[in-house]
Image 1 (cartoon, rainbow, N blue to C red):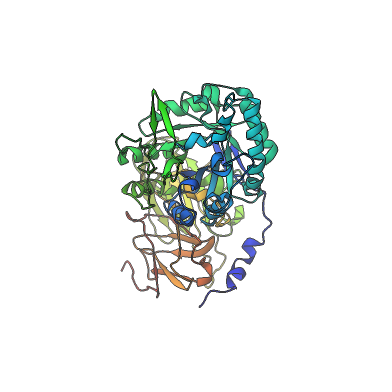
Image 2: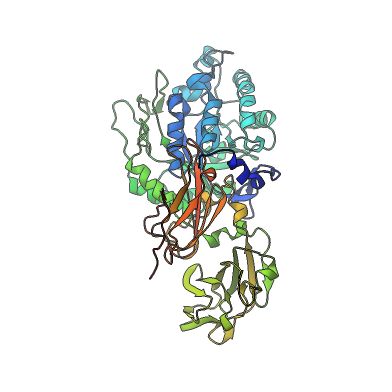
Length: 598
């Protein structure tokens, strides 16, 4: 069936809901960011629109999104847009708004760094050369002449940026004030306070402002009211540096705003090459800590024309025309082996237990004995039961349910490690060892209530007590899981929040994006090697899969569910048992049946 207006009909109920206020903020109680009130962590990459011709922006951004990133970080070079005082250029390769639109088309959030100083190995760090026509000017300070030029520039730039702020419906979640100011000699707090006040006056009080400094730059680079972040590379001591950041942001989320994927080149020096394994290990360690990370650079590009800058480290070191940076995407935009390794790190599974705070945002229900789905008003899907082991289990001890009391499948985990499955109509037990006080989680799946039979009052959940040996387990916490509410394609909680970067044990979420090579048509989703679970495409609950048990091996995907060429589609799987070593999906032109365990 050819795509048409049915797309609107299928999603009518989903998109007619009243839009909630959009926000990006810090939750210091949990040490995380919140996006629209939901826990969020970004994995970002730097790209500079000034180093990439505008016809190639979409290509580079698409490759970044397909690599698993959910945000990009970008500088705004002042001298690129104001070549002479009061003369502004935002056309063609300098069209900042067009770049923001291209990022939005790839569903990428933006971390904006407008300076006024940006460094970036760019000519004069982004400051216009015409400032030096005043030989007395003191750059990056509260010098009145410098501030007058800065104010004039930002009164032009910020009104263009303001509609693109996240809370205004755009994709800019945060804006950086200055750039590594703690490394500059001046240490002028009047200057930093002026910038902070100017940004808030022009962008509003809701905007999330932050600073970035190296480990030794916090004392002069930070300012109360601006969130302090840090930058460092794979060879640096992550633990020590994040501890420094936390002195300035106690209980706040960890943020590395420049995790170096490579380095720049100087004329007369060697081409910089950074070890991929060390880079990947550092990234994995940061993600395991729950840190927010921006990779600098993810795509370097080219210093066209006269735009390459220079460093002064005892001697003058001019930067080469190429800004390849040994980045994951080469100067020509080609994927490198480094990209594939990074992609494998940031595309791991997210264990379901790590998402309880968003799957069940309300307080869990306390009960002496387990309650049914119906008793806690959970009509469909999943309900998690949690208690603790009452005693040490030094020998394998049976965990079982009386009188066929599992309705319908129970996925059992001890301290997050899968112990096995209890299933309706199977008189089985799981044998466990463990320590007193260990957390016992039992995820109950409702496989569908009886529609024909002797008795159709089919209650779901644990309808009989769970027994360990001969001890009835008590003192339960019940978490009704509202997964579908968080599968809206605009919700980003499943992208990078609390990833399990080791092997997943038990129920876990897997998410990916894909684009169609042509118009959206009916197709069939095949999940080779996957075991059992649930699938969502663009927020639509496609249904259950049970590849291992069969006979159904593919799921029908109506064409109107898919988004047209050029727009990313999002697929999310809740795999309840075991994912294949190589996580892949396939779309077929016909259904696949009659493949079973038997």
